[in-house]
Image (cartoon, rainbow, N blue to C red; front, side):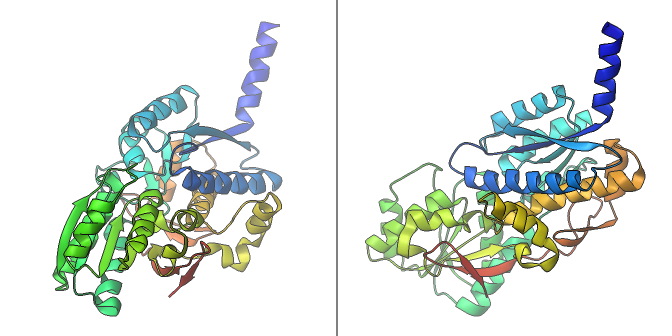
Length: 358
């Protein structure tokens, strides 16, 4: 009987490919995790309906890191102990960075949508992205600010975390190169609620544009409190502020916020099956991290099928330097695991929580 059970378990294991999803299911940025988890599940569901990959059905295994570095390392170790060899995640750069050491050491192939350049600067073989870098996103924002908005005095604000500070400093550097005066550089603490002192300083300095590096909860409050005090500069932020939730925080103050974001992949005709599937479940298919997650699943599984093996190291070799067609279009990775030629767009945000590409 014991032998029979063992054989049965082995057959079951061989018929299943586990793909982990690690990101924030709790905490202040769980909305981004919703995009990530829903996109991954949608991609997996359609692949399974089409027969799976190499005769294997895909099983999603979920992990909540709450966008916290310590929890991310615990998640990484748990994932390894669970025998998961493929991962869509993490989402927050501050979580991806420390977890990547675990995945690299343990041979887990991780495809992240984190944008901080340092993540792939360590020569990892098992870490890839399905999004561009802050070193691309920052200059995109800075060029638009310098060439189109032409402010007189800029403030650069960030949340002192790896992602927020990294993108903010990239923008600041590019603005200075363009001859734009960055009169204020300030770090706030994630979770703060009262920004009256900061706003008073910005008003005194005559700031007419604020670039914010960080996530939407704090920027939403800054914009709302600024408007209430009669201070109405142009606000600009990265992809982590471009979502419906910021409008529920900032209200009418959200109008005209400018955001750098990936393209609207939900509008591509070829992605209609995923859009329809998500809408049938009452989910929003418009979020950028939906599609970075869909593309991650598609890229990994297509290479597994092509190489005829679910050995993560062989799949990593199949990704690096090659082009794979995904819901985001053809994606090509360089030797560091970064995308080649990825472009961010500029979007104007509205009080109803939607954005229009400029």
